[in-house]
Image (cartoon, rainbow, N blue to C red; front, side, top):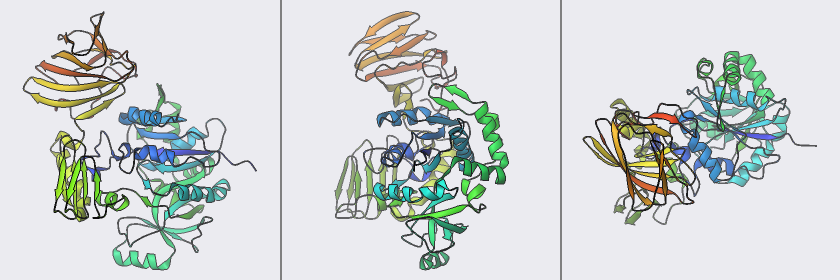
Length: 487
């Protein structure tokens, strides 16, 4: 018997604020290498290798992250079936509906394996075998969810109760979903042996989940169908029509379908899963040294015990400390007791309320052509370090309020200025006067690195008029950080 094709649907939304200062709205946790060499998004795709009749993935992401997603897939040599761009966050039910509609658009009816991009699974082989164990039920029309076998009476997770004894070899019907319980209730759940944690991972036929959504939440399906019918091709992306997608109610697929359907089944998963919901959770799931420490980056530990110490730039030294989380980034340092790491979200709320740039973005800002780092700034001037990928080019643009000096420190640049091209090599520089149309291109095979010195009355990133762009961006600049804070 020929297996039904399986299409991974990787949901890339979410900001992961409990992993601040590393995870921020402009570059959230799923795009960081938190549990190995590759990012959480890349690991989500890579752990699927070997699943029967696996098809290229559908990825659904915030439009601001589209080039990050595309680049991370390119780095692991994966060409997605599609990258769908959500113009506004509407939770997981519309995302699943869009994926199911897209997957069936050509008359096919594949299995959809719905996954979050920001989970850690330490035993990929067991994960794959569990997916295969759920396949027959999903092919027969059941809506299968993967329930995590509890390791403790956790109060921070939702639970799923099975209608009969759990079976690791095949899904069993779901009795009910239970919201986050108190500790006493969670302990009774563990003792019963019929409860699992709700992982938010699913396996079902596209037609089966669509039929249930049409019955239970028809307004979600109609809004998503309209958003897809009026989508816009944008390079390798499909940009969903904003007004139609915004008309969808914001609902989780659990609430919209799984809690109401009679077709739900649960399959227990015991593969070292974590949703990496806090620095404490990351410490628990990471390999620890003999003193219980997790050390990442430029870190020296002397007499430290049970700590998570991470450096992204500067040296971090842990001396005689215990049970701490210390995370250093380019513009912020977090020092927290490990038991209170969940409270980081309160700090992020304060930063966002005061419109502090550290609440939204890092000093490094990613663009489709590469990235730039804010180094230092003063009144009417600032300095950036710019890196341009081989073969890439910035848009043809001009500024009303600033002039720029460019100094090449590595590689070779072709600079277009008011219609004239200039080759600029290492240790050479050029000047872009206010109002000049200009473009920067890397013709070489190594990254181009340069220092940019800006001067002028206004240095905000929204002082850009684009005349031509290789990446389909509009005249307006992309603004991951507040416009009032120059980047």
